[in-house]
Each structure stands twice: as structure tokens, then as C-alpha cells.
Image 1 (spheres, one colour):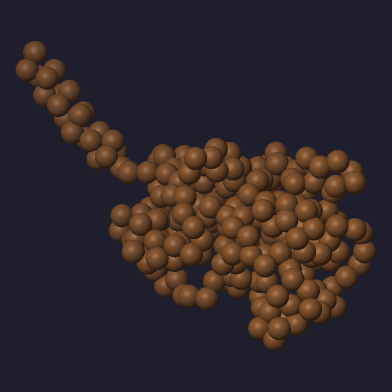
Image 2 (tube, rainbow, N blue to C red):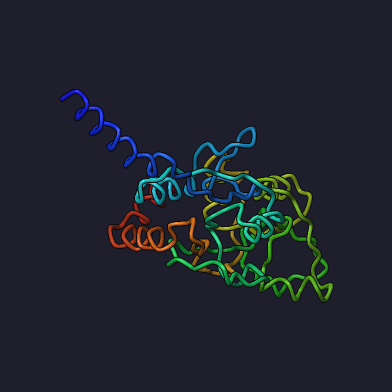
Length: 243
């Protein structure tokens, strides 16, 4: 009887072993992101829309999420070398290289990029000339790239979106670009006279995730989890918590 019990326990332990050894899903996190997308402290993610989204994605398939914080310019190499499994907050027009080993998810939100100034007015990016514009280092702005290439406008890069906004507020340049969510979060913490103003919207892009298509990644399970989250209204509920 004792031997039978021991054999049963051994079989249970062996059958559970593969699940115990399943590694976390590795998500890339650009260190240039700002709240409400993500807050990074001492090289680790603390909170934000993407932290909540990616933790939920992993939990839906019974895994944990590991956040790989890195500079934007290193993400492509990490993807190609298989060091990350999922890259979220991306749209095809923002990247130049193909991702044949990755599968796109459905979009989870729309990012609205806006031109900003320190005083209220209506102005399109094409109306600017000879101006330095605050931008994020390494970020591609498809509508602005021809203006930068022709010399009509000059980029002034900062490492993070928050730094772009702080430099605009401090008068380092007269115009900058930002996504609407980051701007709204920044303005929540400013006195009325210090708030930055939207001059125009110049892009609205549906953003999604790309999942590595490899035997060691539960690719289809992650993609199905995002479909279910969309159907259950989880994306909208998540975004509403940070508005």
C-alpha cells in the first residue's frame, strides 16, 4: 500500500514537471517609454498600460511575464536573436525591417501623435519651417521624415517622451511631438499655466504586438488570448484606468 502511494506521488510529480519548468514569456520594454505606457525605475518596470497588458496576456495562458528593459535601438537585435518573445506597442509604419519570424496580433489601441506647443493655436507640421522639433531618439515619424530629410525641420532628440515634454516646457524649442496619452498624463501634473497645448494631430496608428513564431513560444495561444481580451472589453477597461 505504501509503495503504491509512493508510485502515485512520483507519477504526479513527473507529470507536473514540464509545467513547472515552463519559462516566463519575455516582453521587450523600450526604456524611452513614459507613463502612462510604462514607468521604469532602476531598470525595472513598475506600472503602466503595457505592464498590465503584458502581465494579463501571460496570465491568460498560465505563464508569467518577464520584462526585458532595453534601449529602442537594441530591440531589433533582440528580436532577431530570439532573446525576446513578444514586442508590443508597435505598428508596421514605425519599423523598417521585416519580421518574417513574428506574427502580428490584432491592435489593442490607437496611438494619436500630436504636434505640441506652449501656447494654444492651430498649426500643421507642414506649416513649420526652420524649426527644431522635439522628438524621441530612434523613433520613426513617417509624416515628419520627409520634412527632416529636406531640412525644412530639424530633429532634437531626447531619450524619453517625458524628456521631450520637459524640454518643450523649459523653452529649449518651440514645438515637439508626443502621443496623446503621454501628453495627457504629463498635463495632469502641471499647473494650468504650465500645461502644453495640442496644435494638431498628424498621425493615428493602430498599435499591436508581434509574437515570435517558434517552437518554444506559445504563439497561437498568446494571439488567441488577445482576441479574447478584445472581445471581453479588457483593452478598453485597461486604458480607462490610466486616462
